[in-house]
Every structure is written in structure tokens, then in C-alpha cells.
Image (cartoon, rainbow, N blue to C red; front, side, top):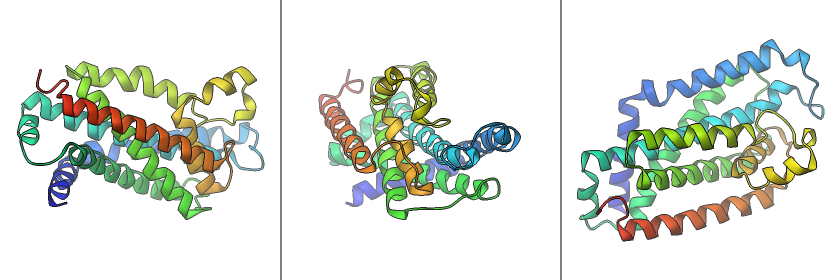
Length: 251
């Protein structure tokens, strides 16, 4: 257990050392979204099922910040270690592969939770911020941040250059976020696009957090939890296989 704590502590120290780059930008970005979509044009948009538009989009913006924080931590950290060749020292140590995976992801989850808290505090002054259900709020924050920490650890394993790290958020994450019901309800989509959206993991994360914060969701929260757990298990098994094989590390 001490080895996991040591690896996690290293990850925490890394993102705290450059807190102006790791913690502040998500707060500024989300504040701009709230200012533009929430304050400037909220009165031009119909209320969604009795919920003010700014209150409706705020949980989605929070989850968006959590996703990007988790991604940036694991992908940059793991690939940075590969680039500097320091990752080899980790793999020749007695620490097991599951602990290596968990250590990198734990640091990313903590960074994501800190970002969530900072954005939540800022949002308190701009929206009607509340917590409808603390349990589901916490569960979806943990599941969402852990899933994307795993996903970007997976990306870090395959990445061969810093350009490879930038491709995923641009061509994968951004479309998934905008198709993940952050800014709108499922009722606005045609049946075809509703079916397509069901394959988007961000959909379940956003709707789960939205239920935890304002009590509104388009998806059953138990179903959402089950789907996210399946994503996490499948991705974890795949990552452990790649780590044991030494893909992108020993070659």
C-alpha cells in the first residue's frame, strides 16, 4: 500500500507544483461558459422542464472540467515519464501493474475533484448551485474522473509524441462533450441521434451528476452507474494487459 501512496503523492505534488496551469484554467473556462451561456443569453432560452437554463447546464460544465482535468493529468504524466525515460525505473521496481495503474489514476481523480470544488465555488456566485443528492453526486464524480483517467492512461501508453496527446481531446473529447447533453436535453434530439448518443459515456456522466445536483436526468441513474462500471472494468483489463506486455515502454 505504501508504494501506491508514494506514486499517488508524486502525482499530487506534480500538479500542485504547477497549480496555475493545472487548477486555474478550468475555473476560468467554466466561468466564461456560465457568463456567456448563463448570464448573457439565459433569458433568451426557454426554461428546461421548469429548471433555469444556467442551472441546467452547470452540472454538465462541471463534469466537462472534471473530464479534462483527469485526462490532462494521466496522459501528460505518463507520457512525460516515457519521454524522460523515468518510466523504466517504475517498471523495474517491485510495484505491481494494478498499483501502477491505480497510482496514476488516483492522482488524476484527486486533481479532478479539486477542480470540481473550485468550479463549484465560482458557480455559487453565478447560478443557483445546490446538491440534490450527495451520494449520487459523489459517485458520478468518482466514476467519471476515474474512467477518463483510465482512458487517457490508455492514450499515454500508445502515444509516441506530444502531438498524439493533443489529438484525442481535439478530435474525440470535444465532439463527445458537445454530444453528451451538456448544453441540451435529450428531448431536443431526433430518435436517431438519441440512439447514437447512448454510446457516449459522457452522456451518463453528465446526466448522473445533473441528477445529483438538481434532481433532473434523462437517463436512469442506476443504469448509468452500471454502464460506467462496465466501461471502467473493460478499460482496466485492457490497460493491465498492455502494461504487462510492455507496449510502448519496452519496445
